[in-house]
Image 1: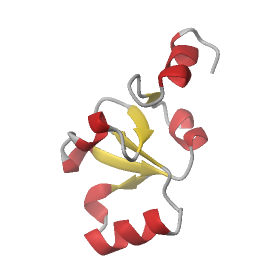
Image 2: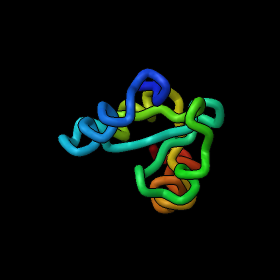
Image 3: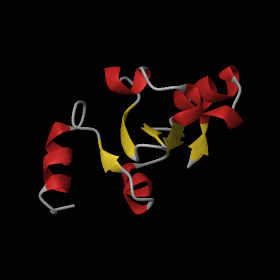
Image 4: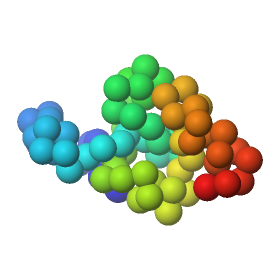
Amino acid sequence: MILHEELSGPQLRSLIRNTSIHWGGNRKLKIYGRLGCASGKRMKRMNRVFFTGSEEALALGFRPCAHCMNTDYKKWRDGFV
């Protein structure tokens, strides 16, 4: 897990461009989703975290976003993840 506040703007863009970062999340709400999700774009910078994969997010106790990952969220909600 990478905290947003630990990265400068150019560092973050570089990690996203070279596909080191695939997912973003809210560390207080323990929700992760796609980097382009409208819900994720509204969160405060201090709460943003980034993941290399969904497995990493799930292992750290984060749940899928109900907006941008609706199918995965339903599986998680029903206990199939």
